[in-house]
Length: 249
Length: 193
Image (cartoon, rainbow over all chains, first blue to last red; front, side, top):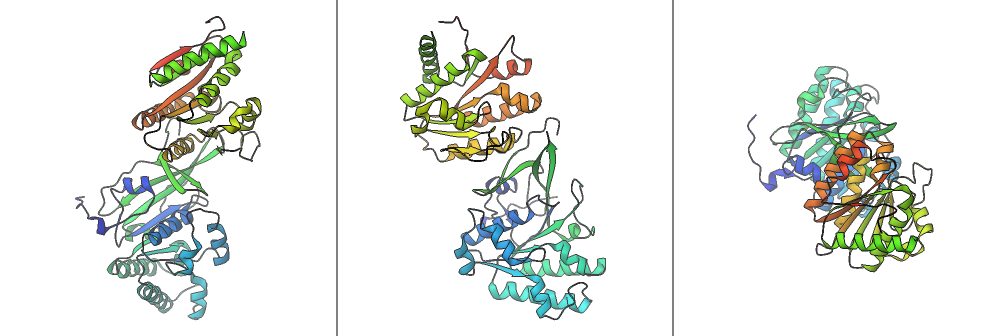
């Protein structure tokens, strides 16, 4: 596929050095990227670091959580040096519990009808528009898709969300939960085809220790590396990447 | 005898380091304490150099206890790959703990992060203590890959490496291959003075 070289303004920097190098500069602005991984692979941390790094660069962001309550999310965040409470207080980083929004909209919290999905989509777009966000996270799209009842609804929801946010030049990360050690990109087999990019976070065992891995599978519009990297998460530096040592992987 | 050995080692280490070469040191286990003493004495006498010391042999705390002046050195930082595996969770001063000696990629990240804060003009040195112990915890092939990666990365960043291999009856074939990747080899024998 031909790739047009993008200018600096057309790239959304993750702020994670090796990641941006692998992408040839950054994620093309307005892309919808699936962050795929099993439990404990670092999907939430990677997404949050992406959001915070953007906010530090004057790009407002919003994080919609469905999988954990806000107090737990912020408590975990406080453990990382990249986290700055002032970014939340100033409104540069917005954390929103999507379940509370659903309740306020009077939606069935377990199963959405077509109308429910449409109402939710509208509210997400409105929030993104009103806050003028340039980075948006949904953690996780799997939990949201679970409430959408048919593959058509899932496809329609992600497509419309992605298109609207792209028009706002907002780059979106959708976390996708998959079973451990399985090379699949989503639970419903639809999300990956509508997304512009896929980043696969995995792990494997080495002498009883679990080594986290990071791989860019797809990124439309970017000439990116597809090499598998080792991923480290530390409280000091958050997510960091290093070439994976492959002998007897 | 020990003092003569230490002085001899100090001189050989200092000469090799002046030449800005990466050095592989092969020595019998019985000379290990003297080598470490000599190395730290060299570091103490060169406070303008920046050193990163990766220990896979002994927990950092043990090194601090054995060589008292280490605690006062301002030009060295430690990366300890063994304490956590030994159930020690408290990091000593100037020390980063790595969860396990098998986390070699994490080790690469920590080494490069530690040097990142050092001024470009400062002479930088990395000690791997030791390749022998890395091979105990990892498959030799992966240690080989790690060593190639770290030697290439350090060379591009103008960091000079000192890697230690402990030889008993004869050097393991993998260690032999690795240690000879260095620019200079110091072979220590009890009778070398």
